[in-house]
Amino acid sequence: MRCVKAVPIVMGLLGLLLFASVGQATAVVVEQSYKWEATGSPTELRTLDLNWGNSELKGNTFGFYDWGNTSNNFILAGAGAPAVSKLSLSANGVGQWTASFFGTNADDDFTGSITLGDTSEFGFFFSDGVGTYYKYALKEITPGSKWDLSNYISGMNVRVQLKTGGVTPSAVPIPGSILLLGSGLLGVVSIGRRRNKALAA
Image (cartoon, rainbow, N blue to C red; front, top):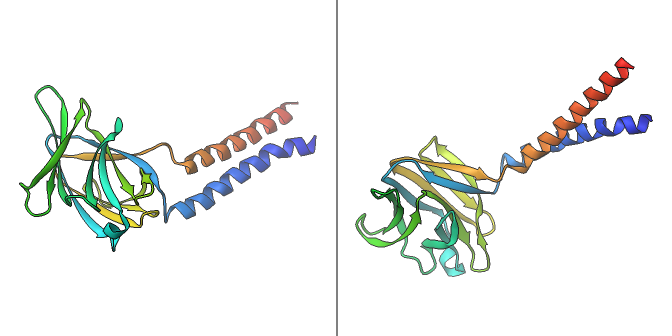
């Protein structure tokens, strides 16, 4: 019986220890999918290549996609891309959103656009010519206006900066560390319940 009673105690402690260890590790590197949403129309974003090296020779690319349809995308930089530096998201009079892309030579150097539909949700992706990666580490440099995106498989690092309007990134799904914390707390709750039952008996 003592061994059975010890099980929730061990589970609770292990959950909390795992959360602590994961928290320390992910403080350095956390790669997740992020859903971005424009909160103003128009919203203008600028992109800057921070660490590409010979990415173009490797076939690496960085792109933008419609959150509801990953095949509806546009290559922003990298091999065979027009080197987009400006993204403009805007809604027309009936609430239909469009993402327009402009090149590095001039703000009015239009390169293309995609229709997002009735939502302004979008995402960024990386590719190394072998696979396409929708997960990356996101570091907020300036609250609400400047972020660094890093993908460790491709080795690419890109900065996204808000110029006008508003945009909000949110992690999807819930980080695994939160789930570990939940398992630890459940174990602790189970311990408390068992102790209360024992005292009542």
